[in-house]
Figure 1 (cartoon, rainbow, N blue to C red):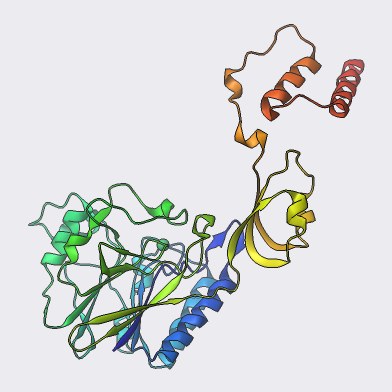
Figure 2: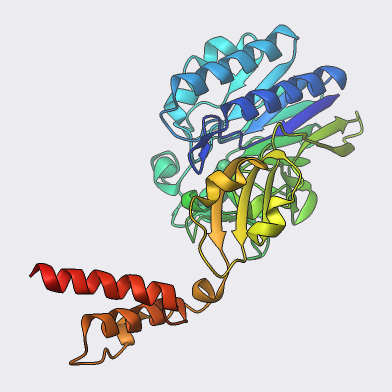
Length: 373
Ligand SMILES: [Mn+2]
């Protein structure tokens, strides 16, 4: 029996003001096509369906089309909400949709009923939870940390270890204090003490994780972050995004295969001077440009746009940006002319004095101001 594990779709996400909806539509189509090609029985989505708890109409519409498409191919779906999602919105109508084999995790109320995905495969859907969400259901437990919360949850499960048990969760899973490799696009949602140790999951044959955007295993090779299908920050520029194809045999053995995503636009970084970058080949990837020029170039975005169709960010790496002095600690010369003060200020900020032409312009401005008094 085959299953596909994905997570962190973040539908509706914008990066640096760019809507990624078309990219997401493209990648969701790839997921559906892969699921059909590989003849999977179901798709596991381990949280962060949307980027925000109140997603836009376009985002909801895109996910609706995706789920409807999967359903029309006779493929099941197993979904939990992530920390970016609203559990109430995700769990809406879940009992009704479950009858059509589209399973959305319900709000956690002290127990989880496993879903029989195959004759001998149980899938446990745990939506993203915080200790405060579940204390009332486990009053015999002193739940302080996230780890204690997970112990309480797992202890309450009636796991038949003769079957293959798959847990789907969006908690921040670490291994003996070792964190996974993080990215900038998930930081906003992560606290400092919200980790859950991987040792909690000993009874599960596979743990389908969401939350961390770089695909990776955690502790053992059957506890895996699927990662986001697209790069959602420049810190992910070297990530190899993929979906996880699981092939479960009757003897509980699980084969895993990573199937790489092919995005509509890649996200890349280019470093060089304006002259060097002007010789680049045309690209419509999402790019961050790091300019090595010492002098600022006016209208730079416009000038680079004939080569780079989707510039998300332009930064400078030069003497000024590398040695930015703290202006608060500078002693300004007293009893000097406005021009001298300006010149000193300019030098502190740019690590070089005004050149002759600049001096002339600034001098002229101060003279005019003086005359206007
Ligand atoms: Mn996420």
